[in-house]
Image (cartoon, rainbow, N blue to C red; front, side):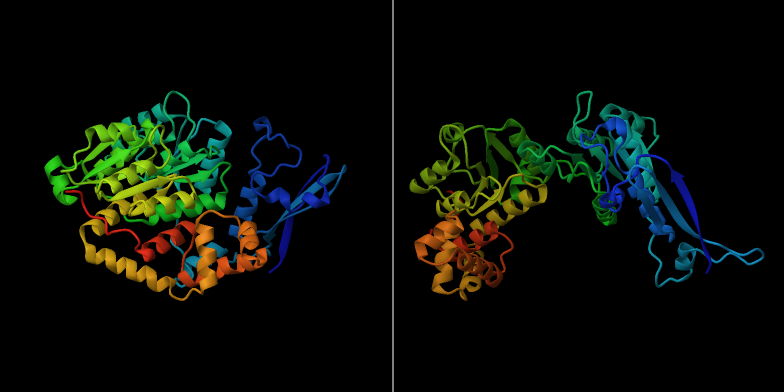
Length: 453
């Protein structure tokens, strides 16, 4: 097939040879190191390149720095009188073995930055989605009220003007739509509070500026899931208590936002929840005669979560407990499980992780045979470790750096790292917290926790 090139020449400042590939990367701008929005976002060439590849028309560039640049696109040239060949997409449509399902779905974009909003709209439209846009939460709710849009997925910035952030917009829209619509939150804020807020409200978090490939993969995954039924209303107290084996869920956390977010998630799951801002407030209200499962923050003002667990354990109260720890705070997780916690979860806490951990803790606390099975399974996973590997594992889980372990055991730091890798592989652990959970269940040092009577 004969091809022709359509070229666009300019006599501008040109592009350095070292930048010729990078200019097609998302958000890359040669002369905008300060990333001033007035000079655009750096998405244009990335979108053009993606569309060219999709259509089978390569995009090329050559440039002389200080002289100018030439951008070209290759297209097939059909001689006069010869029928045009079917393009790539038409051929794929004729061949069922290579055909892929078109991207469909209505997406609402809630973003106050006009340039970001328009770039996202342009990109998603080209991907095949129907899009509508709003500048803030009130604008989005107005679109719903007027019947302008009925989105299958919402893409929202976290920091929005006019009184509602992205998560609050999510809650309002889900309430108005009466269903658990998929929600993607874009933000450059990676603070624990923000990530925790996003995770607890069952939203997907993507960092800003978002990579377009990551965005499309997240959208495809969320829209591929079966549609959720209408959000179930919280059960009445008696029904919820029956469903959880008569156990209330007690949340002890000094962060008002986190405490209420966990209450909302657990009540939506049909649980009866009591919340306390401190260990002292919990102890004042504590009734040993009532069955309960505790979710407790490790670090609290006054009495810490760990101190509360130790106090309850010493006094003979065996409430199933889940310790909330900092991200990758393995030493605290180890201390918590040695003090009687059945499990631990790390911040930021995800909705599914929270619900799963509660269910697992209640199951293990109510079924001693099940707990014994879990412990035996954990022991089997550790059975293949050598005495040296067990020694290294204990020190790693205690939070000791590799160089300190090497000095204490009179071995090289590389040997310590090799032992760590072998331990993770042999036990099937994907992370240090997972290894900690496995090791402590295997130890069986504590008495079997049971529901407080």
